[in-house]
View 1: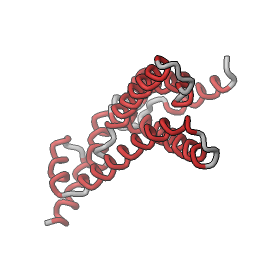
View 2 (view 1 turned 120 degrees about the horizontal axis):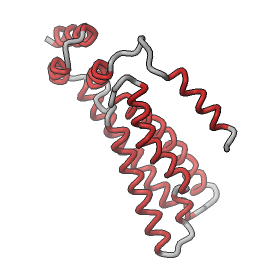
View 3 (view 1 turned 180 degrees about the vertical axis):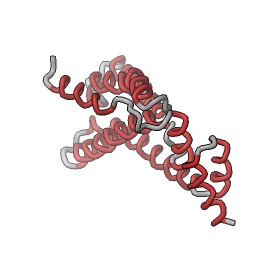
Length: 187
């Protein structure tokens, strides 16, 4: 058993749902209003996982020793577990919200991607390691896709049409107190 496993298990205790958490529907409605891209975290994570599995399989099939340099198998297993069992567990812990776990897991994955891009750039530029070219291209492509999606959906979230569309998300006081002043201010 790894020494950090009990420590990580202790971090779950403060995350248990309590009376202070909103219901999942309320949380999702507010996330759809303010961060409409929140649901893409899990989808993009699984797209990345499938891309990495295919890349590793192709490199191993070609007898290349660079399969482990793309991404380690253990890292893929951790993100696959986080994207499946972790997502379901976080959905339970957040009171049934489907978007909040996707946002949290997606944020952790984006941080990992950013670190991998920086490490691969350093390896490629400073150490002239040609084996880091493929991981750099793949991780950079996913990071650029994420940046483009965030920019597009955040721009869309600031429009009057999106605010009017948010009125269908439910009849929550917090929702209307944020949406109606924005709609009135836009005319």
